[in-house]
Image (tube, rainbow, N blue to C red; front, side, top):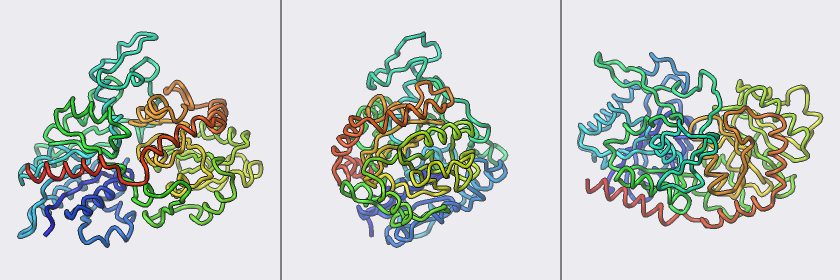
Length: 478
């Protein structure tokens, strides 16, 4: 019998799923059983090798469709199914009871906490992000930035001085109604027994973070990061909440962070690919044809995009530039039409540019020696994957924690530049032209990115292994 069982409950998106899977792999490597609870629309993204581990069990919660945009009545059905599945897992006769539940902070709702408490199972709050953004959200709320004066820098006690607040860096760009803050809701059962909507979006500057109430009964916080990368932020959260803040990352595929410099990682070996306009082999051949460090990789994740006007501005900047590039666009995202640039610019760019519509092999692209820069929204998975391969950034945050991640990359780590200094402004063609050339021509920022990467070596950080061991011991003894 294994020394214990850990239940891991993920949230709705792939950005939550993949780190949760890697956490299960690390738990299983310590001879614990890991039970991963996922929503069924994510099941097709789990690689067959994950299912082959005898110490890992995957339990699906029937869900109607990916989110955001799930209708309220479908949300109710999904959350009712989640409650049923959790009760079924925790009521299994003659089976080992989980020693703890590691629950995505977006799913650590009052009623899920009550289920675990009823069965005497301690909960740990899982942030699939790093520690910088939660630290900044909490510190900014306490700092009351709404009364910042012109030119004032308000330092945040316990955090690096360069992360202080100004009128400029607390600004945010407008966001569309479907994906705006608060559009994603998590129902809690109402007094009548059905779910009622509850806001889950990230807080604005000066707003109380919703997750503060979610972590009140958690015995610790766990993050997809590691001590040598985010020590000040992990220490800050542990001190503020008087509970452990464990950095157990990077929660990226083992072959990715273990690979030597120059070794290309094929996504298809560790992740199931989605629909795409191109194969991994075609991407590899295209990258192989470009000089080392010459390619700008452009991606804004699987659910976000620039506005149509910004996309046209970026397309014009890429056409004007001499730099080779890969641009990933999502269908119906407002970007270029599938397979070609707006206004027939394909002929102008030729083989210098590669547009990928749909899923892109990001691990392959970032690990390829031809990739020399990353124009990114700074979602956490993209950010950590680029850092692990020494790829510098041109940051273009669109919502939520991306603003804090972008500041951390450019102002704290100093391994990139902002495409636009005012985060509330939409990006112009001129911004893209200047930003792309600044990043791709700067040898020093590439050296800094590679120096940062070299600090981590090619093995799972000792501190992260120790943090995971401490988490398992703490919950086993609880």
